[in-house]
Length: 151
Image (cartoon, rainbow, N blue to C red; front, side, top):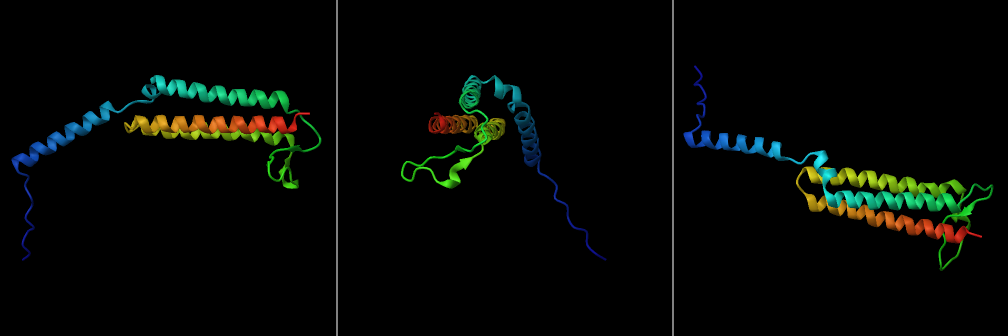
């Protein structure tokens, strides 16, 4: 006949520790920041506002200066080599700059929200600051496209 496997009975101190861990887990779940806490944060609000203003100003800049044409426009310019044949694009390709900027803003905002949820506020601020730097780079690129193509 097979001998039964002895079951481990928790000691009183283990029982107390299990209760403490369960209570700590419940408190952690209750104290996690919510989505409204993320968007109520002043630093997050300012960074999102500045990013949206830069996207809108880039869109207005491109809309104001780049008009529909039947010929291709210069999309990239290199100071060393000038313009080559593969750097011409249809006029509406400049709006990919706006689409890319919106995509970066959405993706990094989601990453910042997840970081904020896991109580990594500095990481979420860094994600939004990185978005700001990306938007500035795209704005500079849009200004360069306008300058190169403006007659």
